[in-house]
Image 1 (cartoon, helix red, strand yellow):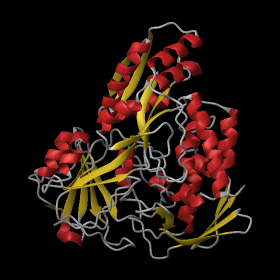
Image 2: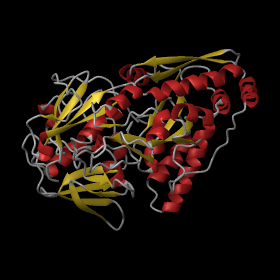
Image 3: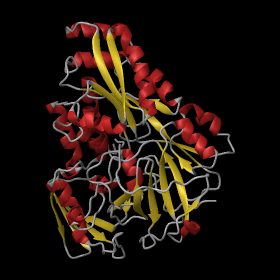
Length: 507
């Protein structure tokens, strides 16, 4: 998300929606759960598109999580991988052959029957077209069907995290065979999940319950994702009954809301991280001492408090403290004098101008950037906080049109998700242009290491080099904070921020 894994979204085309008004549940006339009631969910940004194999935007996956399925899926509580479209899997003694047994009671939203050909098509589409998550198949030599109910994946080396690679989020969704040729997947979706995509426009996206869902019909008739960028407005809409769920909570309201009877508030430590990164192709940011000076000047505690009001933990690496794979490495102290000395050693003249790209569709990026700008000014770096819509943010990132940007990577499951594509040379998400042969070697070795302790040691070494090089300047790990109307049942807040509404029932 970015969903890994990062990320967030922009504009979505499609049919116009009829907005739900008056704060009441809405009867769409579809589905048999919840008497046809529709859950209205306030989110901060709209999807950029609906092709799960192409988008990397979290707002897209907020929707697609409810529309598509994967072979495996994270357990909502501890994020261990468990069966979904696959009923189970086996690994050969040498670790090079994975055999997945598929469910035989699944139909797609277009009425076609799910089988192994759909899995082979979906994975080969990602691989052959080098789509967003092709890096997840780096060790995969072949994906083949062994009859309609079995898929065999051959890997070139042991890949212990393969279930997480293919199931951690809906970027690895299974499409019907030939879907990309038959449908416009940017505006249409044909999954096997509990809801169907009905329509989307600039104000909201509407889903309807899929009565033939293999897991049983949802408890509600549908979901409307309504885009409310301003957190205070989203909270007001929740308190007034205009929406029934939101993850767009003003950070300063978290503590007061914990004692409120007007909403149910839930928080949990996340697997996300937020960071700043600089463009190596834009001087002087290709100079490691300049990046290290910036990393040294930033007071992460102050940034975290301003952006999240305590609902986060400062961190100088990506992986949160409560994870087995966390490394307690924090070489930077907030020290303006030491930062100035690094700039002098770099041989650059100050003042330095740095554009810092953020998006108002994720307001904490704006707040964090403003604090960082105030911290860099005393060392001779003039920060231009460039606030753009998320569609523009994504486009400029992809084009390399930035000095620096600030955002988060969401929904990480395995250490591979935290570091690999962002920092390996030529990685799909290595927009900053980082390259360190030693890091490449460590990340490649870690991806195939089957011993847990040895794998952690490899990632620890890679993380330390990444931090020393300031490929990313890590800031903090936020809590997941969500709220809903009292009496809503069946919803589970998750550390990976996956939003599943299939079991929800409205009061």
